[in-house]
Image 1 (tube, rainbow, N blue to C red):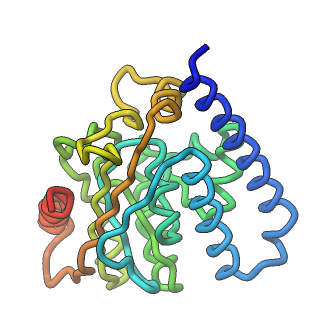
Image 2: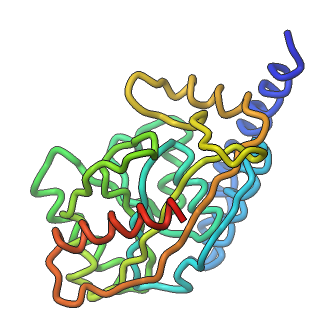
Amino acid sequence: MGMNTLTAIWKFWRGLWHVFMGMWTIHAHFPKLSPEQREMRVQAWSLQFLALWGIQLRVLGQPVRSGPALMVANHISWLDILVIHAARHCRFVSKSDVREWPLVGMLATGAGTLYIERTSRKDALRMVKDMADAMQNGDVVAIFPEGTTSDGRELLPFHANLIQSAIQAQAPVQPVSLKFIDGETGETNFGPCYIGDDTLIGSMWRTLKAKRITAVLHFGEPQSANGRDRRSWAHALREDIVRLRDH
């Protein structure tokens, strides 16, 4: 067994222990913490997880300081949520199945995730209202408008339905680009990708065995609808994210 494999196994077990410690924090401490304190714990936990797995974080631009706001980002990996949380806590919208996943479901719920039944149009309408309500209460909400993961080279078309929540809440939207690169060469690193026939275990193992991965987040300027409907705004946001990613 090579040294690289042993290192990957060691990082895996350290990460798993960190997950259990996160669950304990949610169970034992979150009920006594203010929302702001919870957000700080989630951000710190996410930063620590990336560090344990040897993933560096590079942040360009500035995330919004406070809500109401909606963040929209491209989607590459199961790591994306952790990477964004490490830079700025926000409430993600996720498919309802995640709530029942072992370990992950409790962490996601503790971080304030909003859940949606993706196959139900009626539930999409409910989610738009819930997102708008959350933003009007001062939250920063985040979505992946592609609806699924891509390899990051070409963004998929954006679904516009949930962007209606920002129009409804009269909240700004901040475009966010995400990419994973080799820390030495700067070339795209496809290790964390989770697309097509990829399995979660396979993606995790590639990530653990990679020597240097840097997650690059580029936050664009928050923008208002300025009379645009959700479809035209979604198209413009997609173009903004492409420019941020290639910057």
